[in-house]
Length: 291
Figure (cartoon, rainbow, N blue to C red):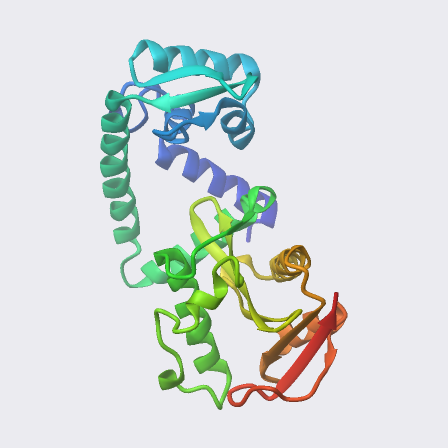
């Protein structure tokens, strides 16, 4: 059996070939992969050129050449930011939006063909790809505020409820509904809802809602399987505690279940202590943390 390093290098070679990383015409659209990735990161309403360069780890000279080529094709425009002349903003043109739509169609068709090769193991293969991509994107993972009723937030909440039903004996499917009837309490100025993003995949969430005065409750902490073991749950808890401090909250509470052993270990390791019960099933453990 090949060792782990040899297997990883084999995987890298296979991916390089399959995605066309060495093609001069990525997906048959007449430009290499690097230039196509730059185009894909430009938003119609504008994207900071420095952010694109950092996201793709490109040197300034290569980034400039890509931008000039895309401008000559009429796919983007670049201009100084009126609010900060040191920043340059790239924007998609109408032709650029059409080109992006073509890339998206071809890319989705190509991805579907690859997944179809896996046959009955497709779900297993996709889960493995999620794990690898989340690991590789670990340094670019971002936690951002979100509305609790967006499709991405609802997907996170559904996964969270599914896990409760699977792991907590007292949790029954009928206990949970979406959209969440309490969603208004997770919106500013009352509360907060945060999503962790790995590229364009939501891989975690956590929320905060007011209880009484300067007391608030942390709810819905969830991390995607592919992102576990990387410290994301701790980062989400730190982020929501920071939000609570900014809202002048002095005491946090949460309820959980003893079956969720990983979550309990995290809470106890980060200063949460037992408090009196304040909710019912499926919770059987109640904690608090002064800020």
